[in-house]
Length: 358
Image 1: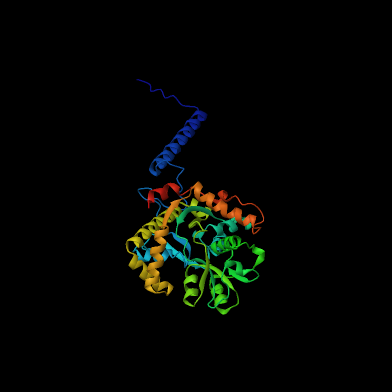
Image 2 (image 1 turned 45 degrees about the vertical axis):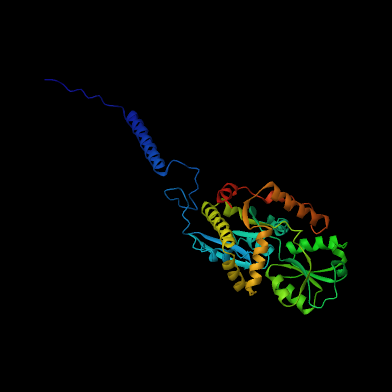
């Protein structure tokens, strides 16, 4: 009879081997999970669900965009047939870029477009303004004018000494008014500057409550339709650069970032469409601004001939241009201290904007 010998393992060793097996099993399961996810822990997943191609799902995104009647981003996209975005766009219209940046500072906007001037002042506000300049819209410098009412005895900018001049604070109007006064041998303290909103400025000018008004966009058209005339212009003073700014949160969020890229790409295509269809664009503009069709067409053609509208990535040249403007305000003592504008510029979208093309 053969005896079967069974070797029994001590209890301590059995427990040790069981623990080792359990650790190995957990590790294998974890590795399988990583493989299923692609194994890339650096890709953000909290704010966007990626598709097969890795593109964020934009169906649940709402992009909050600020605009002025002068920029008319929504009208561009609608007229060009490009408004059917894969995300929701909420437009909020303001009288000026400075008001847009105030709304952005309060967390109410994701993307705005303003001239070089508003970001300079916004950066000096509490918290630094909550924005970064991410792109530059190259545009014309027309409809940026110093106006006088019908029948005014004023014949030159120098004649405005001691008189009331309305202007929109922290905007292109603020800047070109200062430069026009400087060119005429006058300083800010030689006149009585009156801060006004865009619509209130036109009303004050036409009612005779101010002697002149520095304003822009459709306000110029409205005032001229009521008999106002041009005393001076920012045409050769301004750069024509309009800065697109986004919040740091929108820049970092994968889905919002992708929506902004798409939105800017559509804007670029819409500018090209308008140049190829000037009559259609003029008709759309005339209907919105209540101006004659011939006037709208002339304004558009003249503006595009001077400086075609197109988006550009941020650049040292654009930063230097805005720095020059900031230095002028410091010299005029309209800003308390020197502003380093480069601190709020970003290259986060440069590669993507270069791909968009002109």
